[in-house]
Length: 457
Image (spheres, rainbow, N blue to C red):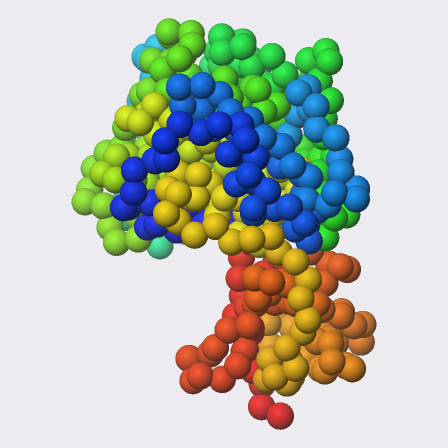
């Protein structure tokens, strides 16, 4: 759910090629290995391609310390959960219980202070397309635990956070990924459905599609919750959500669960549920021309373009997991990628997914440790301001070292994708050039790059 949403790049990249011919298990295994065998993140990947059959592969990047993946192992799928919330929303629309054009205030407690822009309200359609104008996260999240950031957020704190929002423009006018909006949508869906998210999803989605191991907080018998990892290889705890807010990113599912979900998106499975899912694929009418920078949005899905066809894509990430799902309805083809490692800082699973969607898209090899470049390190040495703190980069015996404000040091190594990383903290430094041509870097933590500003000596 800590989604970098590199899917915007997918929308730009998938424009020129038809999908590959029918995949085989061996070919999928080869492609996954090409990208991740020996990768420094040590991630374990479970992958599937659905075409006229179902093809699976799995791989642990570190052959010396593989983590065994079993069919009953459930991954956190992060923000891919939002597409399931959209399906439950479409189901409620079919039942006549709400509409995309309804103001969200209609479904919130009467005392809730809901922002508008010059009288223009936020609609359900704005929540499901990330065009509400709400910030990424609610103010009520402040002070949460970094390793489990949403666990303490209550329904009341979420709703109270609306009073802290001032919309800068009319809802629908611009696009900005919002977990705040995703939680509000989950809350509204569960409030209208009359049950918490897990119960509603089990009854209306997981059960009908045979997603036997999918859950939020109550694992079905025989299901094992995988332990997630940072890109440094360190194990990390699970993410938890309030029962009515879990549709923002709280679903756990096995590879077979997600295969069943993808197959239903292609029209295979329980007829009622398949029809509901199909309704989430159409572009959502926001009632105004699509502004520059606003991707073509369906209900939660981003509609990328591949050889003139609309391909539905969504990625996801929590503190210890990554996911990617792509649905190509016209080609009757889908891709599911699940990883037991948070890969947002290193671009997620997007490069592998793009290559599986479009074989002409370049697929880089694994991120491996390479010898540091003395010239590059020399150019990076200096004092910088990054966000709200200062850091000094120094050359210590040929290695790049960051000296932090508290005097502590972080030693970096260089990987084959050109990024500096440390084994101590899940961050990377990507060398780049400032507007004046001087050497600087982007610090990436949590998937969001922050460009460092070089300070005068």
